[in-house]
Image (cartoon, rainbow, N blue to C red):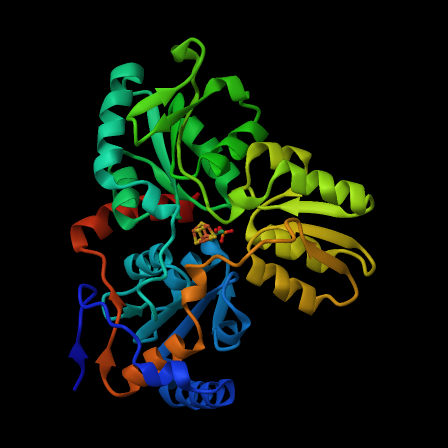
Length: 366
Ligand code: 13P
Ligand code: SF4
């Protein structure tokens, strides 16, 4: 019989898993995965470590994982190797008979934590006083389910780095202005690429509850939430200049969560999938400096020994919260399921899930 322990009962891994050697961890995880068979489906984001990715049934960026989660209706358990907001999205899109497990509840996202519902409702109220009903909200999927629900309730949609351009165009087909949460850089880079000048973009500061803008406020087309990714903000203009100086024939490719100045100086910018595809399809001997998460860069280096690949920032670390999911946590999750124990289940309350679904479905349908 299963003993259900809900999300409020956040469980920590027993010490024995931390003490196991790599060989034993791999052996036990492999046999458990075989034993649990089709009862489980393991999803792994591209930023996960190799020791975890080797057990994933599907890997992908945020958009691909959301699409797989929406289609995968057979498995009883979706074990999500990624961060909390991704597991919430999987729970929203999964069937009612499916349970989503996050092997370590500490795997959060600092960007998603930069926008909470209270702050967003206050911002919306103040912004409506300035702009009336001319705004449509869009939220990066890197946001909590509550923010997705807010956006869904107000006619907006979610976006990922893979479809941001398409979604921003969609938003402008509906309303005159765009309110983009929580990553100012993805919002700014995408709107700029679509031809919106920087002097028509304002920033909403949720801490001081004020809009940051220098000119005539009625010229504003895009209001960007003052949030960022603490990993991608670590790529700087001086990183780009150093690479240009040391390796003049190197291609620089970055994720659009990087600052505008960094994206502007790079050769290419695009989502995680775009970066992977560009490097994979590049000719042997080509050279790449990559501005994205380090586990992914290390994997690309390993997979493409015929190309010269470095991180754009030589002192870059992996995303620390993504890295919370490791093989000991994955094994513990699998062994617990095998024993009929459910730890660290992600459950989004129905009233939140219903509104968040509106935002997610609008994205999946565009
Ligand atoms: P994508 O998977 O959409 O590229 O997002 C990158 C990221 O930061 C995930 O947390
Ligand atoms: Fe969040 Fe950035 Fe880590 Fe992605 S890479 S989970 S956006 S902190």
